[in-house]
Image (cartoon, rainbow, N blue to C red; front, top):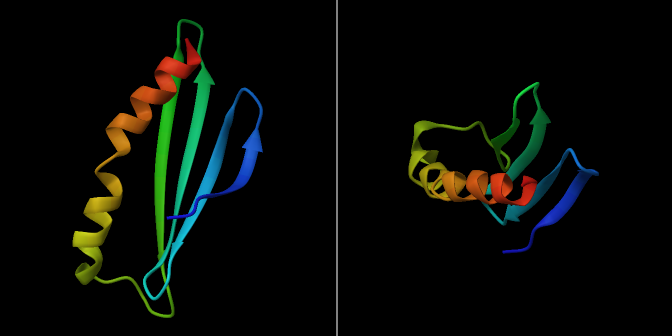
Length: 81
């Protein structure tokens, strides 16, 4: 699957997009936010179906997309150290 960077903010975060033909596109937003005491890693996922409204039939696909979210968040935390 091809990933395209759609937004890059140095030392703050980035967004990547991948398109699944006939299904839709998913966007991963990765951000690092500094607070007074620590850096918070935020990982947001968006799914946009192709040529139709999203339905509960998309749940198995979306579940697979979200499956790697915890590993992605921890990778961002390690990168921020």
